[in-house]
Amino acid sequence: MINFKSTNPYPMKSIIKTLLFLIMSIGGQAQQKSNTPNIILIFMDDMGYGDLSCYGALDIYTPNIDRLASEGIRFTNFLSSQAVCSASRASIMTGCYANRVGISGALFPGSKVGLASDEMTMAELLKQKNYATAIFGKWHLGDAKQFLPLQQGFDEYLGIPYSNDMWPVTYDGKPADSSTSKSKVPQLPLIKNNDKWLEIKTLEDQSTLTERYTTAAEAFIKKNKNKPFFLYLPHSMPHVPINASPAFRGKSKQGLYGDVIQEIDASVGRILKTIKENGLDNNTIVIFTSDNGPWMNYGNHAGSTGGLREGKGTSFEGGQRVPGIIRWKGTIQPNVVSNQLASTIDLFPTIAAITKTPLPNKKIDGVSILPILQGDKNATPRKTFLYYYRKNSLEAVRIDNWKLVFAHPARSYLNQVPGVNGYPGMTNENNPTLMALYDLRRDPAENYDVKEVNPDIVKKLQALAEEARVDLGDDLQKRTGANNRAAGKIEN
Image 1 (cartoon, rainbow, N blue to C red):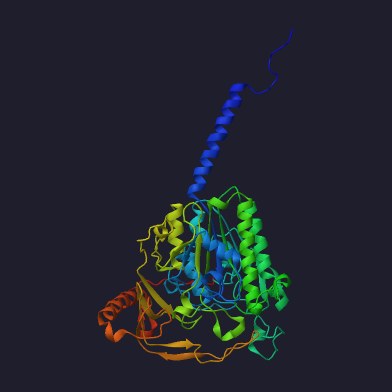
Image 2 (cartoon, helix red, strand yellow):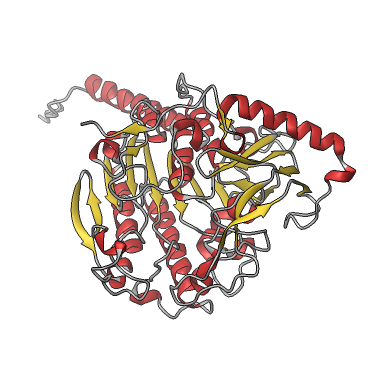
């Protein structure tokens, strides 16, 4: 007689219950992931508005970044909050104008200040939704341990704590003479989590940075493919000194600068490939932008503003208008160009809106641009912008396409012969700039002043400036704002 009794140790009812549980779990995870997309923020250092082929670059080929733009949205009026390193990073991490959180300029090694611990960073925002968080690249918000990324919401860190030119090395790559002040600067550290891992001592060492960051980013994505993650990738370059790895040298018609940009483009390609290979293509937001415009007095080791006026260290458009690209498959339609005003400070509240995460109780300055990303062509979430520079100087204000520049001493690259091959040319650091009104729709290069024929527009912009001075102050008028917050200070 054949025995039909099952030898399976698991009864059929248990198997069915297990299958139902798995189906429900998978469904729940899918729902959770739809509300918590992975976020990758790629932040360049000193990349100009005209340094990508999708923004009109000549003799630089950036197919991967161009593809990112063709599969998402490319902004033409995207502004960094300030045209200098630490200030711009404080803003993108907090959604605030940098002077609101007490950060200005570029912090130097051994700085006694940094981003205050009670400011909510983008990483801390996303930690509320249990994101894995990592930064691979330049931090520049304080190099004391209490200010480093692991104390600011990040799980992992590999990178340099400040700019890559803050090292005891001269423009030709040789050690600085002991009689110079530059020789007193410590060797540039590459930090892993909270501790120095190794030192960047030569230009050849500099050439390894893009590859190191990219490799770490790929590993992080693979490790966290089954949970939401936030990957912040603030590249050290094309901030000088620049260098590309041997595989990319001599590949661009734009010389070493073009080689560096093309290696970064290849890095973007590798990250996009890793996302796709791990099944994350449709649930990952990729953001690409820059901290400010090019450091133009470095000549062939600097980028292009694409015809905009001035560059890094100025509140003219060449200093603050930067590439802005966002891809989010299934939400952002492909090949969209937006001419709406937006800024790096808007990324923080936009990500909060996407992930349905509460904003900090403290005031922020960014606005959510999610309606633009969702295809609302009539959406204008940002109508105004404040151009601050130096410590807390209100140098210009903007409403829509009207920009009023106030009289102020300004850096100028105009009529200055730029340097070559890593050496800087001269700049005029206190060029007297007079008050002028520009219509950026007709005159994005800020060439002709139209204040005399638009007195009502001038009055409207002056009223906006007065509101800003009450709120945030203005060093040019020796005024203190009511709502500035202090930077963090080293604890004794």
